[in-house]
Image 1: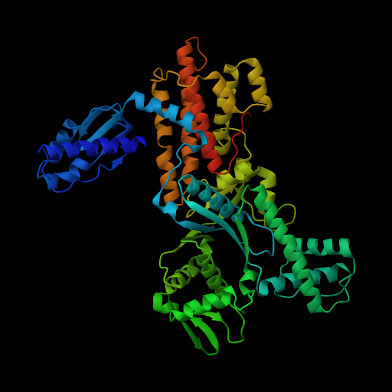
Image 2: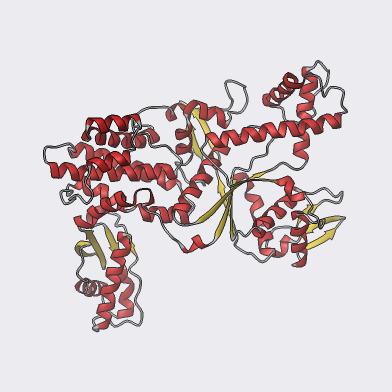
Length: 575
C-alpha cells in the first residue's frame, strides 16, 4: 500500500472513531484526500478534511481538526501532526516509514510502482505516428514515436492493457502520386526529357529510389506504359519507405503490436464484404448516412459537427475520411474498448467528426485524441530549417545519427504534448549537467561506480565487464534485511521521500497521458542523489552506516533505471 493510502486510512479511521464516540456528529464523512504542502517546512502531507467537515459537524474547522488528531490510532507511519491555519492537518512521516521505501524498492525492483487500476480492465488501442509511406520520417514524427511508446510503457506499468498500432496510409491518390514521382525521376536519370508534374514528391530521396531501381534492374521499366511504370514503381517505392519506417522506429526503440495497412480495409471477404462496407452499413443502420448529389455523406451535423462529411464522392472515389470510418469501426470490432490516437495539432479540425462517428455507432466517449505541438529544431540557438546533407528537411534518422536515441527520446518527452518542443542539437550532444538526459544518466552511472568500489575486486571487475548485473552485484554487497535506521540525514530522507512518490506519479502520468512528468521526476531524483552524495559519505569506516547508505544508493539506482526505462532511455552503468 502506498504511504499516501496508509495515511488516508489512518485519518479515515480517526474520523470513524470520532463519529462512533460522538465527538463528531456527521451523517457522512468526507475523504481524507491528502495533498503535498506548498512549503515542505509544513510537513510531508496535508489534509483539508477538517475544513470540509466543519459545516457537516457544525464546528469550527480547527476544532474538527483537533478532534481528528486526538482520535488518530497508534501507528508507525506518522512522526508528528500539526494543525495550521484555518484547519490544515499537516503530517510529517516517521523516519522508519521512509526507510521502508528503500526496502520496498529493492524487494520489488522493476515492479516498484506497478499498479492495478479499474481502467486496466479495458482493452486500449493506442495508435501513433501513422505517417504516409511516401517519404522519410521528419523530426515531428520522432516526437509522436517517443510520446506514444512512453505513454504505452507508463500506462502498462500502471496496470492498463495497451495495444500499440501504426496505421499505414497506403491507399489512395497519394500513393499513385508517389509512384509517378519515382517513375519520372527514373526516366530523367535514363536521359529522357520529362518534367516532374505539379503534383509530385520532389525530395532527393525519390531520385535515390529511382537510382536504386536502375542499379538493380537497369532499363527494365523503360518501355512500359506510363501507367504500368507508375504501378510498378508505386509498389517498389512503397516497400522501400515501409522498410525505412520499420528500421527507424526500431532505432528509436519503438515497437508496435501491429502495423495496420489501410489497403486491408478495402479487401472483400468471401461474402463480398469489407471493413469499409461493414462500417458504412453499421452507420446506415443507425440512421446517420444520406445520399446527396450522388455522394454518400455522414450526417455528423446531427451529432454536433459543424457540417456533414463526405465519405464516398459522386464519382465513387473513397475519401480519406471513409478510410478512417472503416478503420475505427474495425478497431471496435477487434474488441478494443477505448481508442487513443496521437495526432499533430494541425489535425484539430478533424477531431469532432471522428468523435461523432463513434457516437453514431453507439460508443460515445470511446475515442480519445491527444494533440501534440510541433518540434522546432535549433543548432546553438539558431533555427535549423534544412539538412546540411540534402538541403531539404532534417529527417528523424539524421537527428538520431547526430545526437543519439537517448537524447532524442528524452528531449522529445521533456515537455507536455500540448507545448512545442525547442530541440537544440548542440545542447543535446553536451556531456555535462546542462544536458538533462546526461545529468540523469550520470547519476545512475555514479551509483553503479559506488557499488563497484564497495564490492570485492573480483565482483567489481565482473560487473564492469558485464559478466554479472548490477542487481547481482548489489545483492552480494548489501545484506538482505540490513538495518536502515542510520538513514536519518535530511539528504537521505529527501531521497526516500522522492522515491515514495513514484507509485502516485505513475498512476497520475498514466491517467493524464503525461509521460513528460517522468523526465521532471528523473531530474529531481538525480539532483537529490547528487546532493546526498555531496553531504553524506557512502564508503565510511562505520560499517552500519555504509551498508545503509549503499542500500539507499541501490534503491535510487533502481528507481532511476526504472524511470528511464519507462521513457525508453538507457541507464548506463558507466560514463
